[in-house]
Image 1 (tube, rainbow, N blue to C red):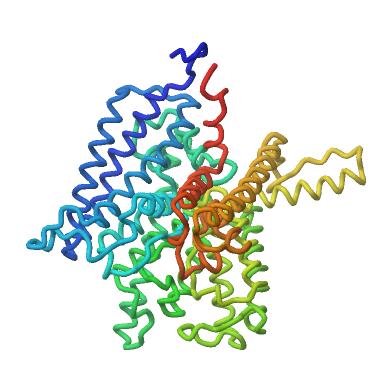
Image 2: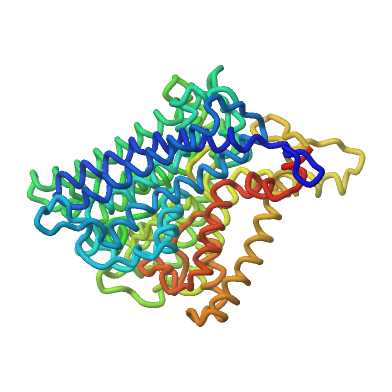
Length: 539
């Protein structure tokens, strides 16, 4: 195709056709919230409409190119468009339910929602959907309750995070034969971290292996959480009175996805201390490279101890948790203690639990809250802000910069100090005994620099736009934490955007900026930025 003297190099029809294939199959997981709606007798029409629209749009887009031929350029476009498309489609249940379409009061199964919803506004619906699929966990859902939203819609909100956790495209590669050719570059463009580890000779098998591990650990957490509820009932001791089957499934979806959405307005604070302790190791697992679980299931559990990234990851979690535990126990870390939480300062178990829970939640970018850390001191909050930039392991469901990049940067700084003293020395950066390619090092430096530049520019834009649009008056910590939380797919920030608050007060333009931040943050910036270069589009 010739456009003003140059030839369009990208076969956009092939990319859009493959996006259509993904959308068409997205109608399948939409059946689950439909079944939830049928069981509870609410929100059924919402999902009947969404399934019909999703399948139809997907089928029509798929017709653009019945036999798509995908190269590297088409792969980048397909991955970027897929995340936009699923987020747009994922917003349909919020729009249909929020606007009360097709309500027939005579037939309760056709009732769409229970009350007025902030998600009836298209920008809010898109924000919530993008936050779900990118596993960010930031919300504009004003009233998080079943009085306003049906259980079917609330379960869809949880499920979007689970689908986005391991990756929409990774799932598509696992189940769609047309994506098995070129699947490696698709997964590499989508997967969190510097690159994806090929576990089997065929990339589709690798995708299926990752999803099997993801599904298995999710199911285990759901069983344990509901088991606490059932066991407490049998013993007559309330171990987890609020952890019903619905809540167990809902939180299983969003823990392993490092998502952070909860159908409870007070997040994990709404549950007992036992539940909070049980969730911690699953958040740690979610921030771990899933390839390690594959090796463990294949008789190589020693890989956990041998993996340098995993050791560094656990070390960072341990050090920051210990520091925060001391701050909370001694007292300087707590400004005020919420009544519903109980004493933290001077209580070893409570201080350790909240410190460990929040450090793990923030570093893995899960975004759950065991208490409102807006009540913590500025020093404790800034410690969590630093954690927002750390991130989980490569090949995990976590966001932010990623622990492996920080590990490589520290190792390369150590090398620079050594070669400064010994200029004749040749000393490669090594991870686990393997030398890191210099090109990969440059890529890590470029990504980290881009991430920080985008963070500072976006924080300035959020601050200015709130002033321009007459939005909330932001301070520096609020602006920085809001951007760190959306770009890093963390979810909650501080003060205005704290864990028990929402992003609802921001003007629509700021929300759209944050939607873009969540999108590029989930795709790790470069796959999106490359689409903006003229060289990508033309020969």
